[in-house]
Image (cartoon, rainbow, N blue to C red):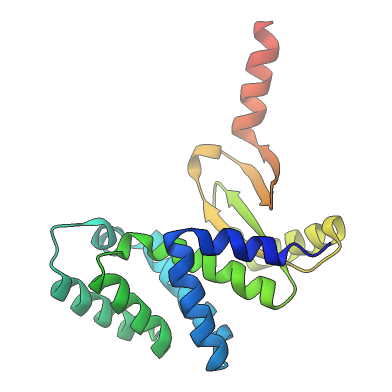
Length: 188
């Protein structure tokens, strides 16, 4: 069963999804899907590693011009492709920089669907190594029967283990959930 059309409809429904869809259409026309996806991955990494960049995206007191200048400098520093840099400029101009991470995730979903993959949202307490990502992708492919692209997030609150969301299916193997289950079992 191909669920890529359903995923595309879900992506397009959100504000970030509309930006991601427009960017995806431009990237497809320019044959630059991989370049844009790589640039957006750099942006997501920068957002998670730089509190200054993350706060820029949510600070409403920064003027549009200042935000555009900072975004242009970041794009140059990260060596982003032209389409991604322009999209960040549009987000800054429209005061939608807070949507940056969501646009990146939505774009990744669209790119995965375009390649015939499905996307798994994986949350871990710590960053996964390349080898762990590859092994996880292979295990998920066995389970779902299709290539699986992984969209990784880090959430120290889960303490350890992983949560994996594919479509509407959630596999929660986090230590936090195990401890909560054990606590509930002991209560009663």
